[in-house]
Image (cartoon, rainbow, N blue to C red; front, side, top):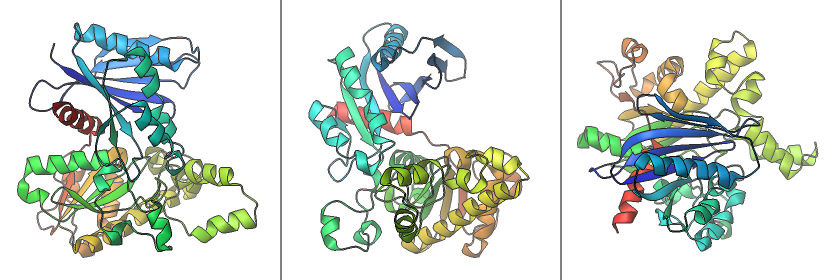
Length: 391
């Protein structure tokens, strides 16, 4: 078995992971797994690249995450046969001003990343949670942090600055942007497809339970919709996206909502779920005939189209539109309806290609290329880990 890197992506009640062979020129996925902690008995499931189950186990929840992580590491050790695991790469949501490239994780780095929790209160603690248990379980195994914000760290002042007193910008209150690991993968994929394509003025629509856009050219982020936190920009599954800040002041001053109550409202009760009153799942809403569900889908599409047009302003035009993420990759109707609103920009969809699973879904006469490109944040992390280890 060849050298390998394990990539961990810790969510609120799950840990997704992928094991990559890194002996070749680029990382190659060997298998992927899910540790699901929703139930009283957490379940660890591992599948090969063809979807065949390699391992499936329930275990009693003893409140010991280190034990669950040890299950993953022990399985990996057995799968690799020998000590070929080179490192563990982690998706870290927020890197703040200081972390703009992958770094080795030490106690000092973890402490610094924990101070960024107020900027990503639901995501940061969870993505950091496996690191110290793994330090105890495998003290000699390198762990590397890869940041969702890093891809956007060179945003220009017009894209990153808020219109508030400059002293707050000096404190780091600025637009950071997220989904950077996904956008980095798309930029790499576009370059692989064609250098000419990679140089185009491109808007990437990462649409899923968390949604954002990135305006990019020549593999670099020019603008993005998320800001200081992952709340800004597009409407999402349970997050509101951009909102009049006066609404928040009103809810505090008139309705007496506390900061914690506002946080829960904005992160957990809003978006598709809040508008529909039914579900945060786009598939459920599209299948529903409920008026509120229909309105939720309409609002999602309208907001996405408006923001794509705004990204075109940042780029000085649009030559390529890429759909990715769970909704972007799989929702035929959402892609169709967004593109229909952008016809004035030269966006023209080929309905047959869109319905048929093609990667290139632009009509023959479209002035804008339109692509569906499945993303892989885990591949980006594995690739970044290889670069760090090579230094």
